[in-house]
Structure formats: C-alpha cells, structure tokens
Image 1 (cartoon, rainbow, N blue to C red):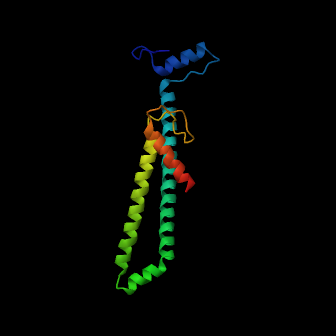
Image 2: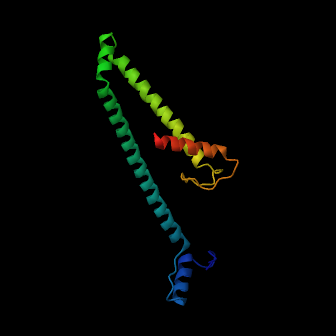
Image 3: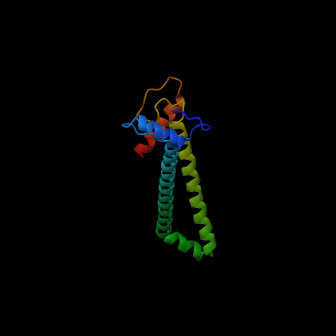
Length: 152
C-alpha cells in the first residue's frame, strides 16, 4: 500500500491496513530495510572475524616454519658465524629467503587461481576436468601443472 505523506502518516496507514486485514502482518518498508541493514552489518562483522582468524593462523604458520628452518640449519649458521658473519647477516639471509618464498607462493597462487577461476574457464573451478572448448590451451596447461603438483 502506498501512502501519500501529505495526507496520511505511514504509521496511520499501516494501522488502518492492519485493521482491514486482521490475519496479515503489516510492516513499514523502513522496518524491513532496517532489519536488512542489521543483518548485513552482522554478516560483515562475521567476515571480518573470519579474516582475522585466517591472518593470525597464517602468520603463526609462517613463524613456525621459519623457526623450524633456523633450527634445522644450525650447522650452517655456526659456519657463517665462524667465518665472521653477524646476527644481522643471518637475519638478512633468512629474511631474503622468506621473501623469495612468499613472492613465489603469491605469484604461483595468483596465476593458478586466476587461470582456474577465470570467466573464460567453463569448468567453474572444477579441477577434475570439466568440459572445455578446443581452443583453451591455457586451461589444459594448468591442468597439466596441477597433475604434476599432485604427483610430486
């Protein structure tokens, strides 16, 4: 029901409609909009919390991996220190190694993700070989790469 605000108030129109239709639930459109906004705010908060958990888990995983790397390479670290290397030299070496690994993982993840889930890929992200056109050599190359990675 549309209400002319110059003649009626929205609340009065909703009340009169409720009296005419006692079995119906009459709500103002503003109430529905407010409820939708509240739901959207809750979903956004949930996404933010999940993102924070993922970032914390990824950070702790990287820290654990780097700690393990340092522990496993104790002899190499001792040799570098015996040859006159300082802690700062070792820190730069391990930081450079971590940076190279992050860059390689980021670039390969981006390339694989953008190739697999590109709009031209008719598989829709299916890695098991969905129907593809004859001209999609790029997708076949990605499939070969994935098979090679899974075999390794």
